[in-house]
Image 1 (cartoon, helix red, strand yellow):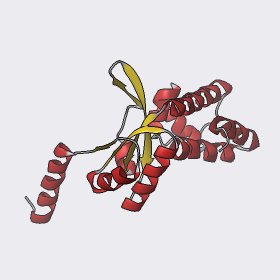
Image 2: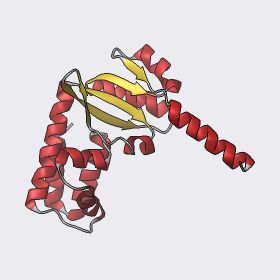
Image 3: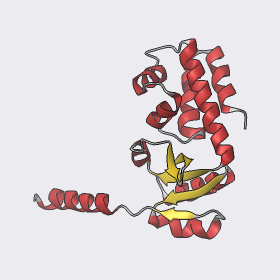
Length: 176
């Protein structure tokens, strides 16, 4: 795979549309990040990045450098290992941090969106292949991926959100 930062730079040289497409593919696809997580690493506002991605704004040289530096920083982190998080895109978009402090060290988080069990298994295999040092996923898929991966797997246990969803379903179904 070609260097993602180089792909974004080359796309910017071709056209505005090519830049937007390459940037979004890099952030969400190759890096597996939400827009907010990427903005945090890049040091640019989310409104600026959204305007760039929708074509409302063109990047100036300083912004392009910040984007490329962030992409390079994130791809270098991948080489050091990271924790992969597999979940549906709305859940991943709620993750505000791109790294977490563990025993005094910053550990990078890389997001993998999945909408089915099959996609989650494929994402788990991809994460391991890309250098994940651990994986976080839902209980419905964790027992399966634990059998096929050689990295540790942690299971998400959504206690509070589960009860909130149960209450919401009850209100909707019975008019409580």
